[in-house]
Length: 270
Image 1 (cartoon, one colour):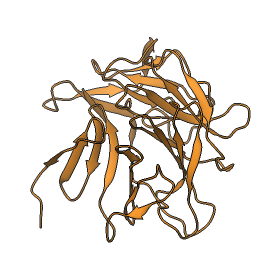
Image 2 (tube, one colour):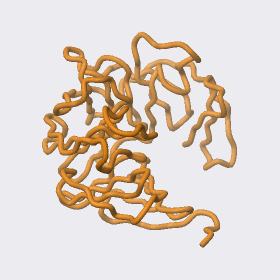
Image 3 (cartoon, one colour):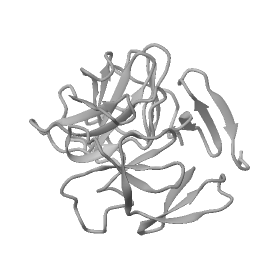
Image 4 (cartoon, one colour):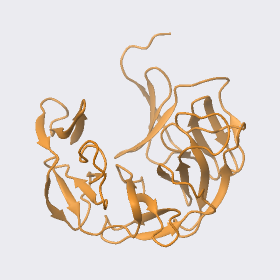
């Protein structure tokens, strides 16, 4: 299954069921509702691309499940207990959990919700000492016995950057409670995040930023440059696990962020 939007047409997607050999046009109208997220499906929202009409703000976000069988969008019946805009992870984490970020209904602070039963039920929690100013959502990465949440949004101090990360939060109990381990400053790096955080073995953590890659050996409390200068690193979550872009055409893929398989696509220039 694959699907993508085309150009600026916010009302059409294209679906393939044969690995890209042929494509079928799909509109973004909801085709009913479902009680759970099927295996191999993807999540989007009623207010987000590609469903929201240009210039129109939705009064209430709703999660949509894109079927791996026909590429159509269906409303998820159970909404996470969050307020404001919803920012769902497109795919499940390697442990099968689904994560959505939004606002706490009572305080308005950044919060996340997780489902471990394919969207049938959700548990919500507020991040530890998040910034009060509205952000751009939270990127969650699940590791071995640990969950990291990267709080995204404009930085309160320092030079503006394109992909700002405000803070990093860590949970040792599956997302019930959080500890803020990192807060971006005016000068100290990292201040940006390209993609998602990459947990490793133990307290190891890798962050791809605009000015290079950074590693932490203490769960995100301190970071050290892993590269001498700007890199092309980028990490994303896919149905097979975690995918890293490591250069012009070199990639790494891992189901557990510990054992990696490296491969290349295309012809690389030295």
